[in-house]
Each structure stands twice: as structure tokens, then as C-alpha cells.
Image 1 (cartoon, rainbow, N blue to C red):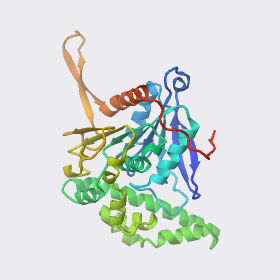
Image 2 (tube, rainbow, N blue to C red; image 1 turned 90 degrees about the vertical axis):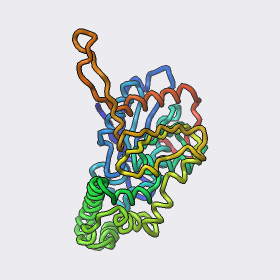
Image 3 (tube, one colour; image 1 turned 135 degrees about the horizontal axis):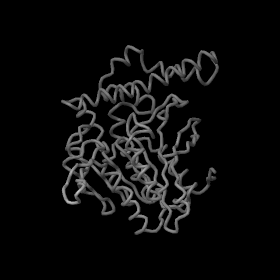
Image 4 (cartoon, helix red, strand yellow; image 1 turned 120 degrees about the vertical axis):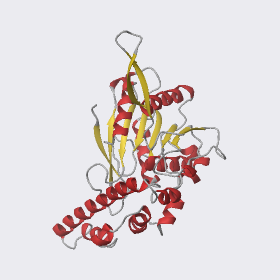
Length: 342
């Protein structure tokens, strides 16, 4: 599958890398053209298998797609002493406006996984009728960040926590190394020296190496880098559960009660939510799993021979997006006062 990379520059002097997959059939069809925007999870990227798999599946049915790399997730550290997080809706809004401007006549759907799903759900709730996307899908989102951070410190979930926290620390270490190198080259000149000093203020290498939990990481790194007063302040202001009832666009929430990243009590509920939100809460599916098994037919045509595993999300999400595009008119318009980028 071929993809074209675009660098989207942000108003604060940073960048986001976007990976586009636009099959020619998506531009020539007589049906409603569709573009999907994909947001990855924590420590993920546009190269995460669940992102690549969905982009391929979308392309096979003629749907254009763009996979978003949150800041610093494309393989190159971003330029500012800030990262990405579960409530980062400013960047979601920037990307969605950019996509709407590029394809003003397309039906725009957005798909968010895990942390990216939380941010996307929060964005839909903040924007309400002003959202420049026509529909959305939220998969395995940590709707209650306090409950999820606590749960990751328990039992088998600690294995996943250690892996994720380790990935987050590597992300910060790469950023510090870049700023240190550029600071040494430029001396005391702005901006690199002051940015390196900001990163150094987060704590010594020994302090950062001692981080074992999300509470510690978000207290020492996420909060100060993103203007939150504390980890709890970040969790309370960013949890998607507070924004879900405010969503006005068609939204499909896919969640599993056995997700090892979060307690069953944090699963989203239909209570208090509008009818435009569809809920599929399964008993099994894990975190971003949702693997289905199908029997394949043997050589004689009637004897089941092998079981073939398939990724259910790749089968159903394109169909749901197509259904939404067929059933509703394009409801969102390109934002005013902006110029489209070729």
C-alpha cells in the first residue's frame, strides 16, 4: 500500500506528519466521495498495524484516508517542548479543518483508537454541531482517565503499563537529545537552548528513569509540558466520559469489557447519551483486538478445514462509514477564513 506524507505546520511553530492513502477510485466514483481521518493510540503512529490495516481496508472499497501522527510520533521529534496527550483536541481540530479544506465535497469520517479515540471523542463533544466531520468511530478509548491510570497499577495490567510508560520515556528522551544537540550547536541563542532548558527542568535522567506509573509520568511530564496543574487536573479535564453526552454527530463507540488497559466500570454507557451515538460493548475483544474467526471450506467443498482469523474492525468500520455517507447528507462545511493547501 502506497502512502504520501504531508507535513502540516501548526500555528505555534511545530508540525504534524500526515500519511495519505488516496486510491484513484476514491476520486472518480459517482457515489458520495469519502475521506477517513485516523488517530492512533499512545506510543503508536501511522505505522501501527491497526492503522495500516484499516487504511488498506478503506482503500479497497474506494475510501481515501489520512493517518495522523501526533506530535513527535512520526519518527522525528517535534520542535517544541510539548508532546501529545489524551485531551489534545487543538491538534485534532487543526487536522480536521485541514482535511475538510482539501476535500470540501467529501463525506468526512474520523476514527480514533485508544488515546486517540479519547481525544477524538472529546473533540466531537467540544465542537458539537460545528464539528467539521460528518461521523466518527471511537475504539477502545480510556473514557475515564483516573480509573484507567489506577487500573494500570494492578495485576497483569502492570505489564502493559510498563511497556507503555517505557515508550513514553523513550519519546521524551529522544526529544531531550535533539534539543541538547541543537542547543550545543546554537549556543545560548533562541530557540533551542531555552527549549532544552525546559526539558531539563522536568527532572534529571535518574528522576525520569524512576517513573513507573502513569500518575508519575503525567505529574512530572504531561502536566507541566501541556499547562495542566497536576496529573489529576489533566485527567479530569481530558476524560472523554464528560464529553460523550454532548456529541451531536453520528458516533459509533466500540469497546470491550475485558480490556486490560481499563476497568470494566469505565466502559461507556448509553445512559444520558443522545440517540445519534451507537454503542457496541462486547464481553471480549481486549484492547484494539476484536479478532473474529471464520471457518474455511475444505477441498471437497463441504468439510470445514481451517480457521482463519480476521480483524473485525477492518471489516465493519468501512461498511459503517459507507452506510453513514449514503444515509445522511454532508452536514459539515469547510471552515471560513482559511485557505486550502494543495
